Length: 353
Image 1 (cartoon, rainbow, N blue to C red):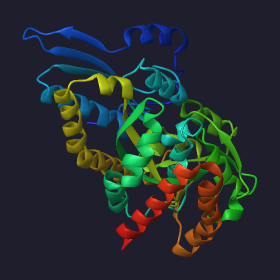
Image 2 (spheres, rainbow, N blue to C red):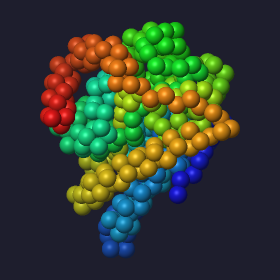
Image 3 (cartoon, helix red, strand yellow):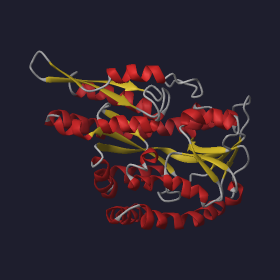
Image 4 (cartoon, rainbow, N blue to C red):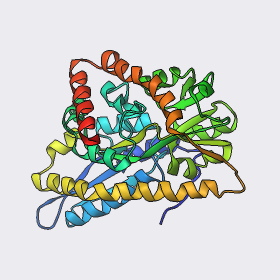
């Protein structure tokens, strides 16, 4: 069962954050048979009823089962430990053990992770894209190594569904973005991406987004359908464009120092849980994105014009974005990042064949 939440409610993190962080950190206690037991924090960027949170709850239950209770996890929803960037820093420092994070919020830390911000880059078919995320050497070895160097170990890359645009005006051509105040994540490449359309990109945490849309601080945003509906962005936006311009990719991660310190049987249980959760994670996002699109369309109290771009209209956007792909390769990353990117381009071509 999925539960709705409202993101614009005040997030009382200032005082609570200090208290919460004192409760974080890996706890190890000896069990009756002498084996270590572990109590970990698992933070997400979303709330109950959204993909990351529901995935994390099921992951925690499965890992506890596989380890016969030696591992217990406290799943934390977004806002309880600060912003998305705060959560990344806490994971990196080992204050938190596990986290689902979006590479868009790590662009300053690992520039190579901004590959997921490239529009019209991955296949339109979500099942093919998820297969690439599961099996790509470029991502699971080369990109992962960049994060491990920052003490964050990616365990899996997961699709949360295709990205769509919402706006206070129609978004059907690149010209519609001229001067448009577009909310983005904290990613330098995203600023470049929307700047190419002539937009005025604004980096914001999603905790600020509903109010910012309502007050026209920004004119629009991008997210998967489930997030648009569950966060109620459609209530303060008159238009939604089914653009499928990108895939929202999240990373299931663990603090690398913690992981390296674990016994082999616990590491093995973690990877078994990751493998078993791959199809389940995809199923969760498929269900939510399909069901909540219907809710947006049928919400008579908050009518939203839903428009799906034609292939010809998508081609106009794609043409503008292709130079951004090259800009990412030539200007954003170094030699090792270019090797990762070139291999990923080859892998995508093979999967599309």
